[in-house]
Image (tube, rainbow, N blue to C red; front, top):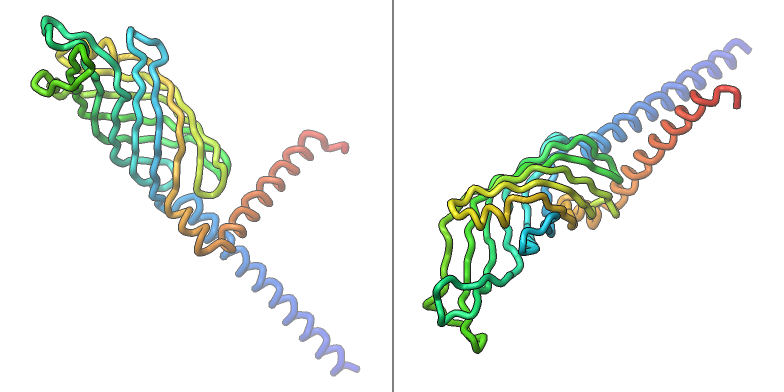
Amino acid sequence: MKKFLGILLLFISVSGFGQSFGSTADSIEEARIMNEFYYKTKFQVRLAHERTLLTKGVDVKINALRVGVQFKQRYKFGLQGFISRIYRTEPIEVPEVSYYNTAIVGYGAYFEYVFIENYRYYLGVPVTLSNAWVTGNARDHSDERIEQYDWISNRFGVFSLGTSGGYSVNYWLSVFAGLGYRFSFSKDQSQNDLLTTPFYSFGIRVQLGHFIKTVFKHQEVNKMKAIYFRDKNTWRAKKFKSKHPNL
């Protein structure tokens, strides 16, 4: 009988140790997955459309491309390029020209501090600093191009500051919208009047690393989502119980 009880106790202790070890191993794996989701450096591409909020004669519409990284969850930085949609300007003392097809072109760098980012939402404050210029393609009264009257302005600085928030459609694709204020530092005051203005923006963000992982490591992505929403629902339940202890 004593021998039987000893074997039973040994079996129970080994079983308990196995469960404890398995639980610890699962916790370590979950921590690794979530740490990678939040803190691993992410390569991102962002396509944005900006429009003047308070129009000053011309409704400036700018398409921008940003390519960069997100580092330690809180910091985004990289390079950007942009070009405006063509708008018309009138010639000054050039009788051969009927109008100019004018566009703003530029490139530069951006930085964004992220206040909030989880699986579904993010909120940040982006700052950009760019080098820009204006081009004008001349058209005659028959709407034909006359290249000898084309012009390009001197280059000037453009700075913007704003806020941007987004919603993640899935693991790798987000849509966003934002508000900001743009400052132009051209020697031509008419260009400053056109560009120094509040604006709103919207577009999409693609996280290329997340896209590749979705294709080749789909099971791990599903596990990460399950952990995130499980923990979120647990937090909600605890919060509800703390507010309603009698229920």
